[in-house]
Image 1 (cartoon, one colour):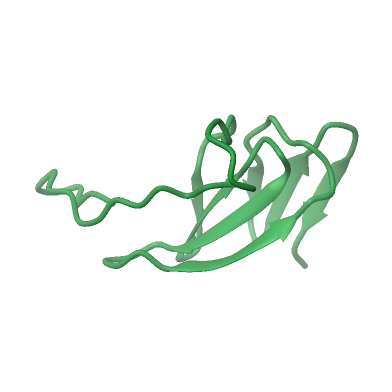
Image 2 (cartoon, rainbow, N blue to C red):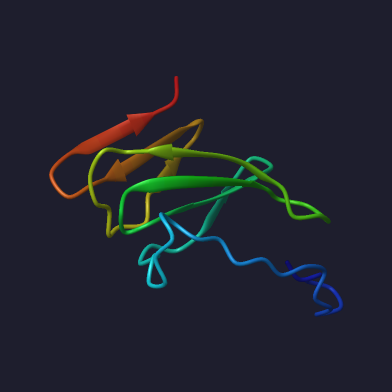
Length: 89
């Protein structure tokens, strides 16, 4: 986490998916006040976007994911290895 105005690092934390070393292919993204990233193994990581590191949760998609999701309003469109998943209302 970096302060955009000053460039000063606020915190740094390594997030691991299933204990692997080579886990993320997609780009992290912010939706609302949350930071998301999806591991190659298909696990969605949700972090609080803020001054302190806080992992809010992890959710499995059930298959691998190599694409960055699209944010459309209150929805996420996620392309996994063989499905398109819509998350939201």
